[in-house]
Amino acid sequence: MGNEFGRNIKDFRKIHGIKQEVLANEIGCSVGYISNVESGKRIPSLPMAAKIAKALGTSLDLLLREDYLEHADTYKELIQRLEHYPSKNQQEICTFFLHNLDFLESYNRW
Image (cartoon, rainbow, N blue to C red; front, side, top):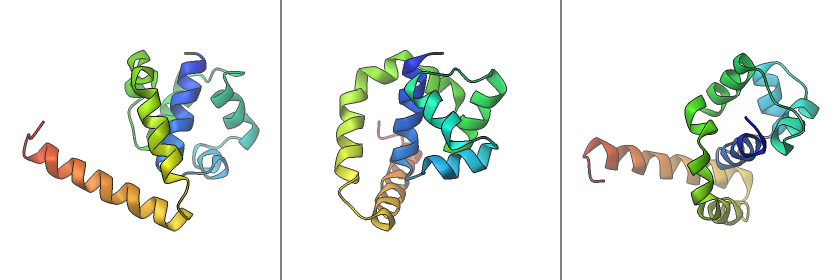
């Protein structure tokens, strides 16, 4: 685990419209701890990393994947575009996007 892990956490958190405060409360830690993990200043224990993944609605293995960064520019562009919308709309857009992905996956269109 390292700085990539922290960046992946930050990206997932932003994609889901979750503030650091909310994530911290969900997993029982401080906002400073989340900030330090996201910036790579602190490496979480394995149980804490698993809690973070669960709170973000993803798997620990996905957060740890190095190839996640291969698509970082695309993810960052999505996040930047999403940040132009009010928080309520961000959540609606994410929900819409996820429902469409679920639909496509259910019909194996990939």
